[in-house]
Image (cartoon, rainbow, N blue to C red; front, side, top):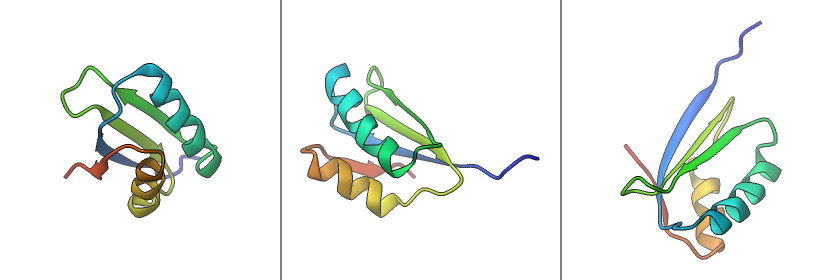
Amino acid sequence: METNKMVEVFKTSIDNQQESTLVGNVLYVMYPAAKINFDLADCDRILRIENSTVSVESVTKIVNALGHQCEVLV
């Protein structure tokens, strides 16, 4: 049985592996079944979340609370 997945892509200010791991671990608490990855080599320092549900507002608030800029890419 295939479930519908949604993918949200965010532009962030995260610029190193240590911070991406920290942020990723916090997001995994909220989305334990999600695929979460970062592309820090991209000029937008991409955060990508694939899950059955993703709250753009919650992700943005969490990343901002951890001291980084975060906005959804459209």
